[in-house]
Length: 498
Image (cartoon, rainbow, N blue to C red; front, side):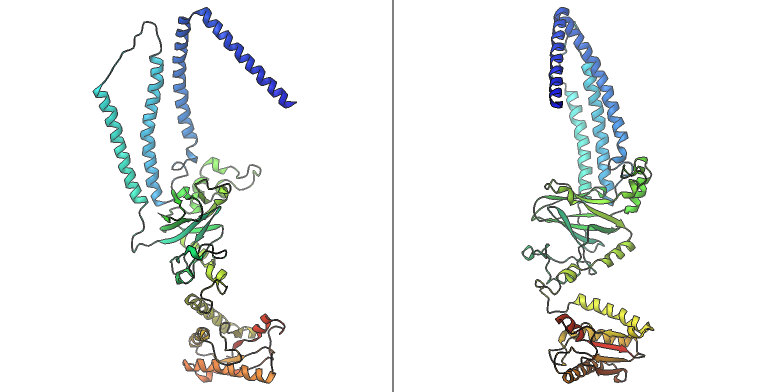
C-alpha cells in the first residue's frame, strides 16, 4: 500500500510539473519573445550575482568550520619532522590556487551579469591581445616554477633514505588481505633476512632462521609502539595485491607492492599523549566518544594513531587498521622487554627449526643472564627450599655419565656464579628415574654428579667448595608414570650449603 501511494505521488508531481511548463510557455507566447528574452537575461544576471556571493560565503564558511578536522590545521598539525614541510607545500598551494579560484569565480559570474543581453548592445570582437597573452602565460609559469622547485626540494628531503652511520631504528611491515604483520629487530638492532621459498603456515614471513639476525626478531600484537624523537625506517612489502602503508598524522604514505620492496623514513615528534592533549583544547573533541554514553570517555581520550591501508584492497579492507602508540624512550624500552622472540617462542625445536641440535648464541646470553639472577636470589634467600636449583640445560649420554657438548654452556654459567660468590660451597646432586635397577641408578647418579664436579674443578673451582652426591631414584619430583615425568626426575641439582 505504501509503495502504491509513493508511486501515485510521483505521478501527481510529474503532472503538476508538466502543467507548470505549459503555463510558462503560454505566458511567454502572450508576452512575446523579445520581452521573454529581456526578462530571462535580467534574472539570469541577478541570479549569477547571487550565486557568486552565496557560493563564496559558503566556501569560506565551510573552510573555517572544518579547519579543525583537516590535516595541517587546528589540532592536526603534523606529528613528524618531515610532515611540517609537506604541510607547508600544501598551504602555499592552497593559497595560490585559492586566489586564482576566487578571482576566476568572481570574474565568471560578474561577467555573466555585466554582459547579459541588453537591447542595442553589440559584442566587441578582439581576435588577439599580445600583452594579455604574455600576462596569463608568464604568471602561471612563474607560479608553477616556484611550486615545482619547492615540491622537488620537499620530495628529495622527505624521500631520502638513511645515511651510513646515522642513528635510526628499522622495522618491517608486510601487508596481506587483510592485515599487517610488523616485525621488529631484537637486541641486535637488525632485522633478519627473508626468503619467500621458506614461507610456510608457521613461518608466514619466510624468515631465514639460519641468519642469526632473525633469532631475536619479534612480531608485536594488534598495538605496536615507536619511541618519540627516533628516526624510523619502515621496510614495506606486500604478499598478494597492492596495499598502502598510511599513517595520516605523520604524513606517511607509501605503496606496498607485491615483489617490489619500498620504504619510508620518518621521525615522530608527538607522543600519543601529546596529540590527545592538543585535541583536548577544542570543544568538538570534548564531546562524548559514544553519543549513547554521555558520561563516558571524550573523543580526545579515545584518540589513537592508526596504521591504515590507503588502497581498496578488497571487502575486508577495513580490517587493515592497526593502533600505533608513540611513547617516550623509557616506555618503549619497557614494551620491547615484554616482547618475545618469534623464533624462540614459536619455532625453536620444532620440525621447521634448522638449528634443532644447536645451542644458539642468543640462548647462551639469555641463559647466562637468567642463571645469574637466579643464583643471586638463591644466595640472598633465607628459605631452605630456595637454596636448591636445577641445572636445566645439562644432559648426559644415555645410560652414561658423559656430559653432552651442549651442557658446557650451563656449567660455564655455574662457574661464573661460583666465581661471583666465592664464599659459598655447594652440593652437586644427581638424580634418576625409577627405570632399571635401583643400585645401578644410584651408581649412575653418583657418577654424573662427579662428572659435573670434575668440569667445575677443571675450570678453577676449588674442590673444597664442591660436594658430589648421587641420590638415584630416591627423590623424585613427579610420579614416574609418563615420559614427561620420567624426564623431570632425571635431573642434576645443586644446593647452596653456606
